[in-house]
Image (cartoon, rainbow, N blue to C red; front, top):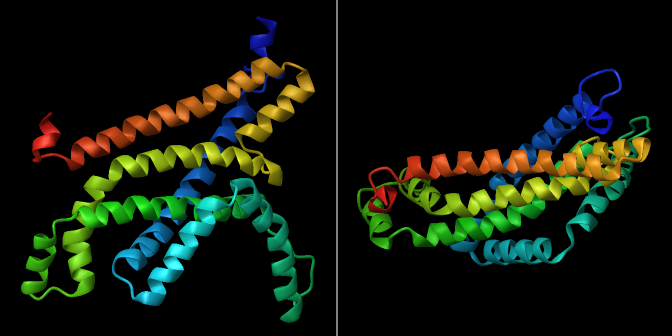
Length: 238
């Protein structure tokens, strides 16, 4: 019972900081997922409807980001980002020191990685839209943007939701790597707590419970979104 008291919210408990760390994990994950979704949409557009140069750049981006380890990308943004910011700031005549936060580095790194994976999900969903539907939109005079907004995006999103849900789960787990930047998220906080109290099993189990709670709740939300999007479709009633 004394060990469990360490997880409480009393004066000797770590409950409050663990909750704060869990919220930080959620904040990093949401920001990275949004960045990845924006990039993934652009990359998917480049792969499906772009010209030769756009397709080559989109293919190169996905190949690099899916082939490089996540931890290396985070190090590149955190440590390499400092050098870039310093070089730019110095060239512009701004006084130092220059820095980049662990949140920003982790969010951008995971967002770029997620963007490559989300692009493949969105590309597959885009290509699953019936060509006859797209042709009908063109016949009635829709512009490319209007066609995308009113026809392609709504139908593709229904197909993409399960895959995007899987990518969200991956982003949550990848957020644990951001601890190497010193950002106090779940992994960093449980490591500090375990090292301070020497209750390694207790706190790492608590960290696993936090991640499991986030992923379980997220899974239920995505399932609700899928059922809502499938209303009126035959598979929605199955």
